[in-house]
Length: 207
Image (cartoon, rainbow, N blue to C red):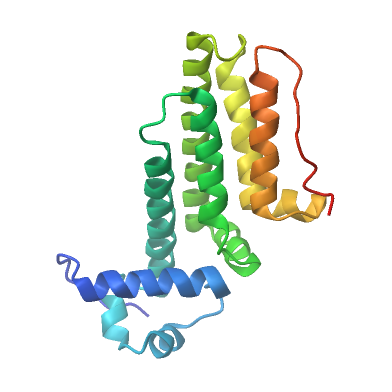
């Protein structure tokens, strides 16, 4: 059941509520919650939740979209001011690892299992591939990286990012998402190096 909502400028209270919902969803997922349960956990009324979105499903979309939007902003902040393409790629992938660190398996599964949030997820991975492509192309032009098919490499990296975000790669390799992103960064930079041969400096699966 939904309730009409009048669009208004977000208040500081609504911004805090949205941030709190992001924290809850990251820790516990969102698929099993009802609006009543969410209102109880947030210590607010259902009408307050309706001010954010007119249904539980649309609330999930808004919260997940907010999470990925904020994560993207933080990642871009980490890249801003860096001129070396190698540092850009490292900072970007490190930022992605840090942004996903609080995400539980339940959150990842719920995002992937609900088509509207899965679409947000895919767009995020595609955007990441686009940024990596930009860094690679800049590195090739500057002579930092060897000549490669930047679009192809970036799309491959995007698929690996999506696999890491989905929890698939980490589960198969027995490593954390942060370790997987570190290994991806080393693999990409090693493969692009003008010396030619990929060089992975650590084995994240080794304890």
